[in-house]
Length: 173
Image (cartoon, rainbow, N blue to C red; front, side, top):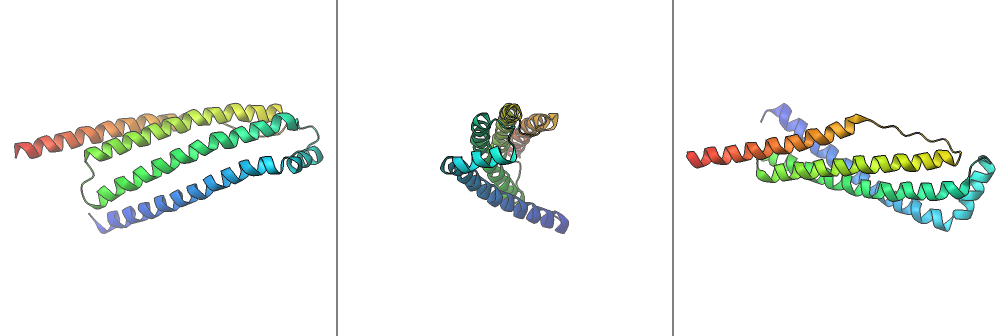
């Protein structure tokens, strides 16, 4: 492996570890927000009644709690995804990325991406509820995430086939 590739791989691993740590912090924040929404419900409703009198707080609070509840599994999926990518980079560092385990890891990444996209659509429904409560919030739909899901499933198949062909070649030699 070239020096540039080694440096890029090291940077990738560090970035993945950093993202995984941020994801854990975000998950803790989500649970703190959810708990605070119950303990400080009066302060929350008072804030919105003062600063946004047109807001339907009775409709807003459940929608925001729902967003946190949908976001929490997304963060868990991101954690699994980042962990599998770190495992893959370890095999690249070891010089043997085309192993059946990496095909399985990529398939897990693809399933995580798929579930994240499904949950993202669920967030869209909840954003609509927030908007219906007269509070401005935006959400958009993009095909990019869905294409990433397809690409990752295809890459998992490529890795699986590559590992199988490599094993067949080793058996013939």
